[in-house]
Amino acid sequence: MRSNNLQAVLLAAGESSRMYPLADGNHKSMIRLLGKPLLEYTIEKLKRAGINNLIIVASNNKIESYFGDGGRFGVSIKYAIQDKPQGAGNALLLCRNLIENDFILLNSYHIDIDKFINPLIKAMTEGSEGALLVKERDNPQNFGVIGTEKERVTEVVEKPQKGEEPSNLCIVGIYLLNKSFIRTLMEVAPEHYQLETALNNFVKTHQVNWLKTQEETVVLKYPWNLFKIKDYLLGGLSHSIGKNVKISESAQISGEVHIEDGVQILEKAIIKGPCFLGKDCVIGTNSLVRKGCVIEQDAVVGGYMEIANSILMRGATTHSGFIGDSIIGDGTRIGAQFCSSNVRIDREPVRALVKDKEIETGSRHLGVIIGNNSRVGIKSSTMPGVIIGSDVIIGPSTTVLHNVYDGKKYYTKFAETVEK
Image (cartoon, rainbow, N blue to C red; front, side, top):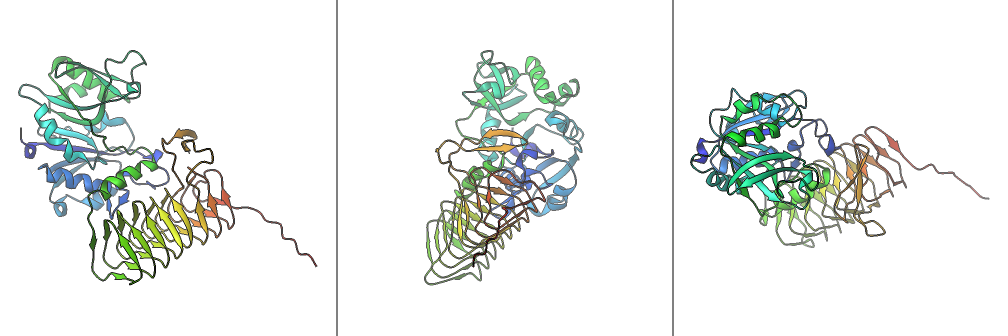
């Protein structure tokens, strides 16, 4: 099999509600990092691997309005619309009249897909009708798990009971399948795990092989997953300086720092790579940018601001203070002397509240996640793992202890006392 005979089906539908407040009405694969939507990186990687025939399953026309027919990206893109979240099985069925050959099914944020295409093709040996990418995990009960006989998959069990797992080999969400799988999928009643049920039926009557990877694959479930994706993208950058860049003679730049056109780096600013500075962004006087930061287009790192391992989205502006392990949304403005606490006082892993459920983030370092176009007053601070929505106003001298949702005002009341 040759990769240029393959199609790719990219799943880009659904509400992305667990990515609140960063998706902001779009699919999470359209979140921009280093100047481009994540989906664009995935498309580039598929093209580089020789896969130019793409099908994108989306919730609406927003993705199509950006990518069009794929011509300006050197690929051909067709679309299927899944207007309600009905799972990957339903999404694939919507593409059944567009699928012509063997195909790779993947989530649209898999910017690392190029690492797995050729190994999967080799795993789909002559006579087999598919190959599944799997990884050994300590908690297989949280995943789809395969049973095996030599190189063949014998069963697929979704989230098995603890102690009843057929193995610890867990599906990572990248599938290479023959078009004949669609017939099996059509025979399964619609339900949330329709795809997994169909895979289990398919492997009983068709040879599907498995391929184990030792590498971590991209995960994008919660906002803080963007930090690892950021680091993956920064790892592919080298030091470069664009056009019309102004760098003060007293500024210090070290490591791999990618500087786009029109960037201004003011007096005594210190930048330690790896780091991405987007088009027309400003790095203020006496500021410190370190530990893998991404400063997107038109963003401003204010004077006397220290920012570490953080992402400033497009047009976000800050003044003085400290921002660590945080994500600041498009157009959000942060006043002077702001501080994001990013470590619990007891040094335990940070937990975050997502959809009214407390989630273990798995990290001891996590600051604040702020949505788009919010306003934060001077001398304010945030506790570790706090999530602030879009169009929020945080009053001056306020410590944000809990999540604040879209359009709310959150402030501390003061009592004025005037003594003679």
